[in-house]
Image (cartoon, rainbow, N blue to C red; front, top):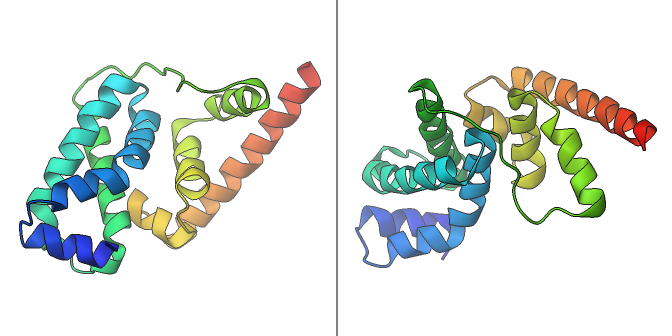
Length: 165
């Protein structure tokens, strides 16, 4: 089932639609939420609330082709709502990093949250800059500037890290 079919199924309250939504997007949305909330507990709650919101608000989606962008924007909203409500954000490291990937992770972790988020959307989740702009709620131009600056800071951070080794 493609995203259009998933949207149609969610709108029709198909009994299998929510399971399909979880199968297709739960893992990647969870990773994105982890980045924004700083750990597994916040990510898990944000993921749950994102899926509930997606099912409840599916009729508000005007373009089914933009489902993934819309879903990530919902997830971002859930994560930011948690941060603004005073919930603590303790940056924990996702499991599974070893060797060179740990060095890269450390370089990314040294960046500001806004830098990590734009890089996460583009490189880990495969968004184009225009789609990342939609998720972030900024203009394409702002996303391009943010991405360029983040990539430059990451490059400088990686250079610094390799000098220390």
